Image (cartoon, rainbow, N blue to C red; front, side, top):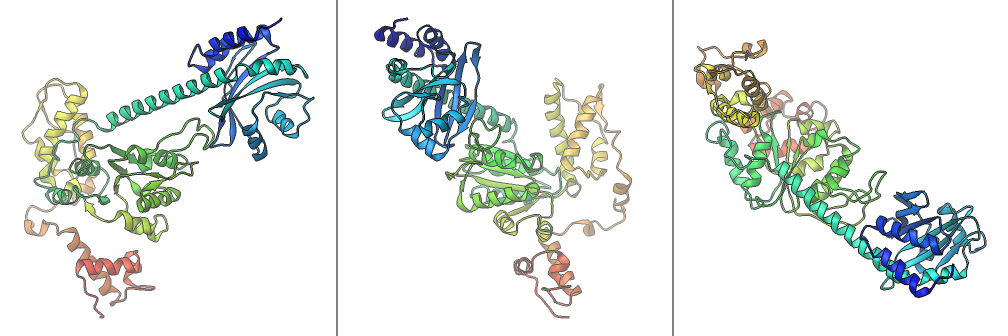
Length: 510
């Protein structure tokens, strides 16, 4: 079939430029090219500069649309040659160029003929259009001269399609961020903390001191005491309150995914990484990142976290470019991190970084005066969640029953008890009759005849100072070495001395 160059140029251009979807565009072009050229398959390849590879993004054959999604890494000499070629290249057994032969092996060209059209935009190579025919020695010079005519419009169409894909990707990122933050910023985060005027009075005073600043905060306390609520209060009381508040439960992410989840990954960083992903640190840029259960972080994540805290930069998995970030870290744990340091399960340098301003949250059994207000608050919250239109009253004597319980699960256990009572509610008032203290809890209940003054707990600093004094007395003033106070307390000697100085504990030889 005799082909008129002007008609060929017009028909191919119209088809390639007819859609921003490269799969649709290449399929429409294939139907016409089959009429004028020997071709059984067409591929669109782009050059992935980061991977040093060919990325096959679209394809069509006589059997239908192909979904290659193939990445072909190139040796350095083949990569350099591919960047330099300007004219169509025929790849078959007749072409003895060693670089062309290497390319034929990489693209599995055996028994077939390829006609490769390099595509450039403003002198920069962006990819190639590959025509493939079954059989060897199919393509000739006139075929190369003909396909050369449409190099520029195909390059423009490919560039526009890639730009369109990038815009769609950025749109998806923004939508994903929006959905993510909507999930994270659940209703009620800005509400007052229940108990801030009673059992949590000291805690909230510390929160008011540290919230306006930018330093790292470490929240300590048993599981379920409400560390996330206090983290919310710190964030929303800070200048970063208009920024994102991103939460991570370090113990809920597998070791194999923790780096990708926290720090993100680049496209092609590992099998299945088909697109780049921003991690939680990047999502929290300009705001606060809450690392719950930081003691569960695996060692390699601890190293990366330490680097972020030191440099305020991160590198995605598989990336080499440092990304600056502006975030505040709030960490929380129920574990004894100092003991984990002595056991080699937590880095001491990371401990010093996060332990700038520790806040201890007392368990619910040590602030029983908060239980009535907490219960009323949780009843209202759970009624909304369960879709109950009427909030039931709490029966006389029920609150006393709740206050007599020891709450080993803390506020989280109280939430579950309230929800269970509402599910079983059949009218009247909430009785909480199913709540019975376990034997170990009842045994620890103080006698009514005990002096109430003796039950008032000392402050955490006082308790710690008394404990250190006992350890020093027991070791007869010895701090370092075997059978020293540091070994007895399972902490570093320098940490013990620093703690003694802070608490005003004087070392005495006995």
